Every structure is written in C-alpha cells, then in structure tokens.
Length: 207
Image (cartoon, rainbow, N blue to C red; front, side, top):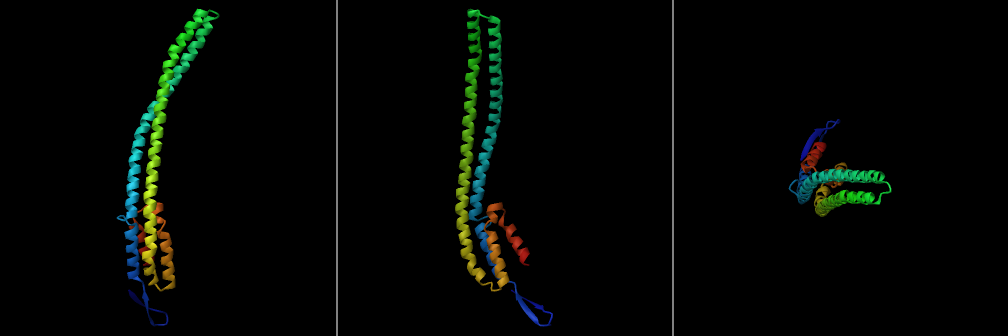
C-alpha cells in the first residue's frame, strides 16, 4: 500500500507501509503459534494433563495431612507408654517380678502403636512417591510435546517469513521486522498467551 505525503520542500513523496507483507507475516505467525496451531495444542494438552495431575496430588495431600496428624498422635502415645514404663520401673525398685510385669505392660502398650505408625508412614511414603512420579511424568510429557512442536514451528517461522522479509526493501523496516521475528520466537514459550495479543501489539507498533 502506498501513502502520499508532502515533505517540507512541497514535493509529493509516496511512502509504502508494506501492508501486504505485514499481513502475510502475521498470518504465518498465527498459523504457527496461534491458538489453533500445533504448538498451542501441544501446550494446552500438556497443561491440561498436568492440571489433572495437580488435582490428584491435591486430593492425596488431604489424605497425607490426615495420616501425618495420625502419625503425630501415635508418636505421642508411644512417648506416653515409655513414660509410664519409666514410672513403673521406679515404683518397682529391685522387685524382679514387678519389673518383668512393667516391661510386659510396656511392650503391650508400645508395640501395637509402633506397628500402626509404621503402616501410616508407609502409606505417606508410598503416596508421596506416587505423586512425585505423576508430577515428573506430566512435566516430562509437557516438555517433550511442547519442545517438539516449538522446534518445528520456530524452524517453519524462519523458512516461511524469509521470502516475506526479503520483499521489505526499506532497511529500517526490514531490520524492525527481523527484530520482531527474533522476539516472536520466545514469546509463546515464556507466556503462552494467545498469539493474537502479540500480533495486535505488532500492528499497533507499526501503524
């Protein structure tokens, strides 16, 4: 598109704003990084999968908190058994039958609590490991899918926009588009915003 303006000397100067090239460039960006692109689908699918994983971990957290509270109560009860045993030994003095009974009472009090505590701690460890495996798995899948889609999109961006930028013969305009292309690549990864936001920012900047 050509726009005419009058310079200070009074002559008419036609300034090209490269509207066609801008539109073509924005279309390429929209196809490669827009909301319907393979990259966005990979990010959305991976994020949705990690969202489900987060829900599972959150539900497990409630059970873990309950088990942790139970483990604390069991530990306090075990401490109470030990304190009662100490007091019983003091009361028995050198009386062997009394000491043996105190020891038997201690084991009867302590051992069931210890066994239950071990079961509770096993559930906590098993659940924590499962949650960690789920978290690592979803993050690995998200990285793998998004990285593959991003590499492909970034490569296509340079391949498809190079002929477009070659038609922008204005040095400053061409340089500006090259700079914007360099900025285009990391933006979807850093923010994963709908790319129309970036495209509209470019249009506002150029107009």
